[in-house]
Amino acid sequence: MLRNINRYLPRSKWTKLLYLTCGFTSLLLLSTIFRTNSIEHSPFMQIADNPNEDSINDVDHDRADPDRVDAPDRLDLINQNPIEMKRKSKPTAQIYIGHEKYPKLNSMQRFIPQRRIVHLDLKGGAPKIHYFTQLFSFFNRIKATGILIEWEDMFPFTGKLSQAVNTNAYSMKDVETILSEAKKRNLQIIPLIQTFGHLEWVLKLKEFKHLRDSIRFPQVICFAEPEGWDLIRDMIVQVAEVHKKYGMDFFHMGADEVFQIGNCNASSALLASEGSKDRLMLWHMARTAKFIKQTYNTTVLAWHDMFAHVLESDLLHYNLTTLLQPVLWSYAEDLDLYLPRSTWASLQPFGHVWGSSAWKGADGPAKFNSNPFHYIRNHESWTNQFTAIYEDFEVVEGLILAGWSRYDHLAVLCELLPIALPTLSMSMETILEGRPLVGSYPITNELLQCEIPMELGFAIGCKFPGKKIYELINEMHAKKKQLKQYRDEDFELNGWLGRIADGYSVSSQWYIEVRVVSLEKKHYFLFYIYR
Image 1 (cartoon, rainbow, N blue to C red):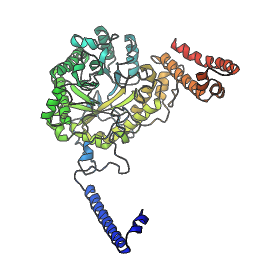
Image 2: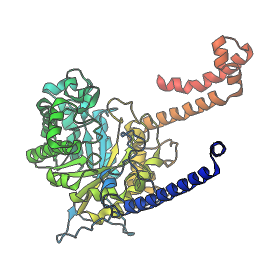
Image 3: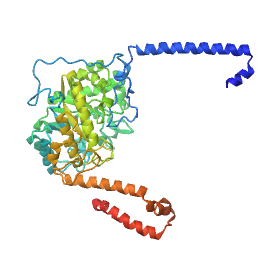
Image 4: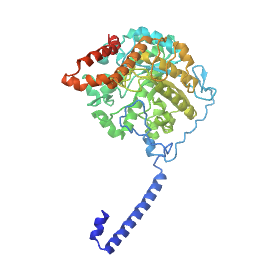
């Protein structure tokens, strides 16, 4: 290109052009240097915890991945100084959780959560009533201290909500049996009712479609609409009235993954007065938490992801720090990446916090087989997180071990509950030891009377509730993998029974007869399972 320019310009003009270009480049470099310097010292920019790591800000744009929790946006926009967690002054009175002094540390000064709550997600593959007795006994043996029950459409709601109840829902007698069995085994019982997003189980129905925040999506309710608010309160009251008879020190109001807000007429009007979607969201969360707290004199919990990024002044304006306790959830193997110190710092004004790990339903929406490795790594990482931050808060209340049945109400089933019980036991043993066990789980091996592989695979002959389901489904998964590999790699199958042969209905009869015998043998086990 320069050669073409030089061809048509006199030498003197070319020299002038060269000088002008050099001068312009110098000015550009100087301005860039000053701009970089001003950015580095701007009071409105956030310095990353680790300058060698990329900041995480929903890079995959899915906003629904249970394996990641993005760093709060607020901290990318304000507070130039590196994140410094302010150490909470130690209370003068000794704190107890249960009958144990807080905090509980092992010999290596690693934090051990004293509340270990197992989440039971009943919106898919819900157990039969008699199974709960065996299940709660198992929870006692692995030293769980409580259960978090997410009923969704399996609760026998009455009135308007009865239209959304599952045809296989529990009866009220069943609910009372479940709760009494848990109480009998000294398990603390916490109900979970979604009060914001994840209301697909109601909003999917034509009877409630008009209450969607966005008419296209049955996830978020139009909470500013009086009818929507009445429906939320009705859910809370019906569940709480039963639970309070069995002890209800905590009530979980959900409130995670709210992907639409401020679209319906009532919420849009309220948005104009509140000033931002964040403040609109906080308004509803504060109203809901206040209703639960005042009506039932209980401590309210909420998932953290929708308010970890908001301004502290807004949290204080809506009194959220006194109305609820955040539950920080992340199901990834490396929490330093997905749950950075900046997230903890943003929630320090609350004083009391919880963590939430996962023991099933968090390594793929269609995964139905065992995968202990992922979940054990998640719990090892949670021990590191708790140990690093517990002194920065008044109390780290406990750990909720989430066991999702579906990613949401409209997704397929993840692994069934019995399949993940060995993983739950190994995860709990990891948390109680407060350190990585490097593939050695003596307590779990003694409890199950078998040795569970940490990597992909399964064991035969174990003893725990639902062991037969564990064996059959994991064996089916192994056989399906073998069959797929055979289909993809077999020399004769691909040569004479592949797509081309099938399309033209032409092949060698001899090879067909040889391969059919082999295929029948490989398919036999799958047919046996399906029957």
